[in-house]
Length: 193
Image (cartoon, rainbow, N blue to C red; front, top):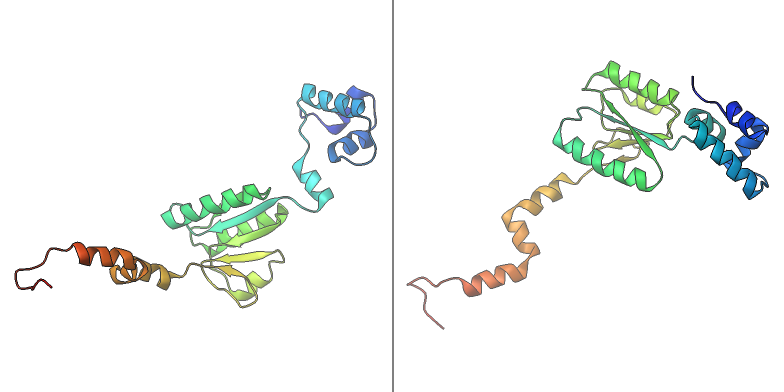
C-alpha cells in the first residue's frame, strides 16, 4: 500500500497541514521540525503526488510533444534537443507518437489536457485549424505554420539547402577559395606572370 502524507504526519506527530507546509516550504517552520518531517518521509519512502502538487500550484512542469513518427531521424534529433532545453528550464517531456493518425492525435491531446500539461508542442498535423485553436492550452507548432494565431518553429530549408551547395559554401569561405586558387597547379597553357 502506498504511503500517504497522513502516514508521515502520524509518524512525526504533527498535522497533515504541517507536513504540507514543509513540502511546499510555506510559513515559518523550525529547522528541527523540517528535519523530522524529511527524515520520516525518507524512512517511509514517501513521495508526494505530483498530480496533487500540480493542482495546488496550477503548474505541472510537463510539456506534451506530439510527433507523427518518432522513428524518423529528424524527429528523434528534434526531440533530443527539445527535451534537453525543457529539462534545463525545469520541465519534463511527455512524448506522444501519433503515426499520422487523426484519432490518435486527438486522443493524445485529450490525454495531455487531462494530465494538466503546461503546453503542447505539435509536430503532427492531421486535424483542422479550428481543432488546434480549440485546444485551450499553450500550443506551438513544429515545422509547419498551422495558423497565423498559433506560434510555430520551423527550419529555413531554403537557407539550409543553399548552405550545403558548393557555390554557397564557397561564398561563405572566401579565404578557402583564395587559398585554393593560389595553390592550384597551373596547366601547361597558362603563362606565368
